[in-house]
Length: 238
Image 1: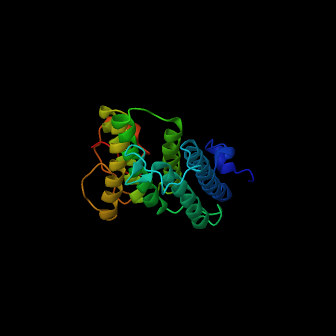
Image 2: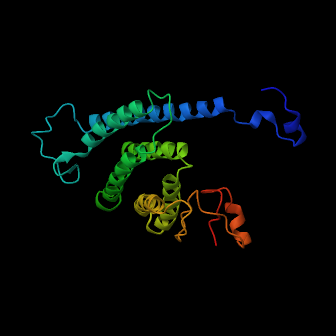
């Protein structure tokens, strides 16, 4: 980029500016990261299946316990199906990692997040044991969700999803690990739903600001540290 006297006068280093090509590069990088983490999920899922002797037994003949299956379907099978599905959808929706992640992927990934809440419940309250592989699988789904959120953070529904997740997870701390997962997922769904049903520029009250809501005067100084979060046009606190 050629030197710009105007930029130099206001003291903005040119190397910190994000050019259009850089933005496109960041989009492609996030999309490729999504595919990479999907592959990691596939590897973990098949490793989990291997540790459960999935490839040396006939799942149609084995009777799995209620702690290892859901309605007779072993838990390892969900991962073996889920992550290849996510990878295939990611490849298709990003044109092999060349375009942005579609925000509708958030709906699909939220289904997986809801399932992890049930699995957290089993780990914490029923089995009372944790597996590094299982936690790794949950984490991969959360990372994939985060990548979609990052690329679509200017969208009203996605912004509501973020606010709801953060607030829900904070409330869930009261109830421990399971509470963080359950309340975080529930809060994200409610936050996204709230911003979907509230029109741009609407005046509906609530903690999930939309991009169309105007900046209000008379905010307390406590809200200043939160400037730039969410829509960037309304503070978190009244």
